Image 1 (cartoon, rainbow, N blue to C red):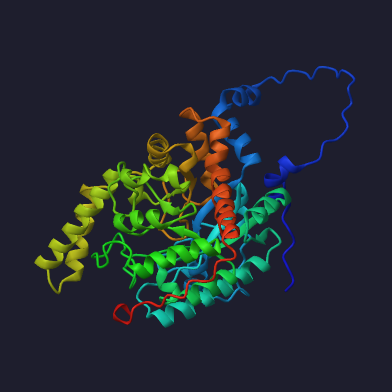
Image 2 (tube, rainbow, N blue to C red; image 1 turned 135 degrees about the vertical axis):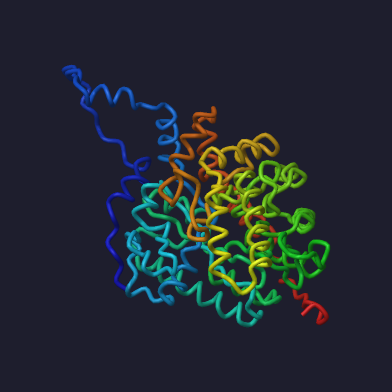
Length: 447
């Protein structure tokens, strides 16, 4: 397939650190005249050391984001047809969404956001049967690979070395992540084939339980992981596939940490002590992460960040249910009542500061080595104010710099921790390469 020409902006942003040194003229130069006037005064006033620190960090350690849902947008908006899709700029995609939402990701904004590596989620709905889920996952892998192949700015990646090579080339390392164990149809054979296709993490559940793992947002069935679920974790470790514990129950998190021999990830979660949503990670689990070597890739979804907003949403849902009960068969009146409620109870604003609060807490409980970033863009209606799309990462890192994070710490959060985790998973897999595949079948009663 003919590839789109690489865009200079992306290469300039991501490759600055890789430019070769050139010979310098050592003769003293005439001093440059001092700029004067309103423009010079404004430049001096607008200088922000935190922005400089953030930019310096992202120049040498571009963002390695743990979760982006562009693939399901391609399916929902374009039926997985790329002929009419331009990933260079998706600002005009509102007409492809029933509510007029514009996509939050494109190559232009990824460059502005200093993104150097991205896990693309090949998510499929939990409502599918397992055979349907396996087929649709393969279709999502296919469209994602075709997207990557269509743009020189993107580089398909399987390993930590691939990621670092893409950084040096000024390209975006593009990795695949499965969001939900239903994508393997309760089959370790399917898991192995997904790995062969390039999938490098699997979230053990999505919003519903699998036949072998409990979700954080479903009624518990297994007390965490079943015996088969624990074998799934072991086989993922053997393959070098990252075990993703976003979406799973606290008991499943603990079971996975008990079994895992390689670092785990939470590809898009926050800290439950800051926001009590079940999708976030409790301190009991955070305290174990340093011993495992894993990371929480902090999400940008407002409902998981801002506790006040979470409470507001629960109250709004209760009011919606109350009005629907009182006004049965009268949807227009329900809508009018909710408009009145919304006017009296505006949604609390969620800002970059809320996201930084989660990073602060994880740093305090688990350490700086346990933090990454997993935005969840194009999988949510909007991000926090100032971070509405993938161009906003530098603003987050500037906020962290204002809070006292050093450049080295920002580099760890941006990508160094994520690259380390991927490399350590590969290292463990190499150490057990002579072990045979696990051949456990899921018990028929669980199917």
